[in-house]
Length: 91
Image: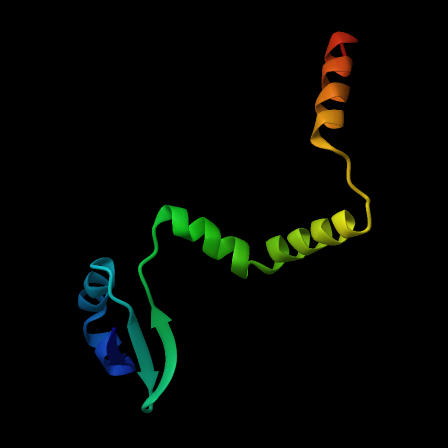
């Protein structure tokens, strides 16, 4: 793990990103106090990040979990069966 202050980031953003791409986290400090962290992000880990940090996605997940706890869910088998029935009926 490395540390860089905001001036370092302004002067050498490419170098700091290169460090991160090698797998090392960089903590950015402002006036000597931690302000942010830059860490490696792959396409796969980006999906996880978005699921964890997107307020709208987080809200939808929480709503789904609440529905499941309160028994307002439909088994996937029932949904697939209904889909087949509608397909056969030409809907």
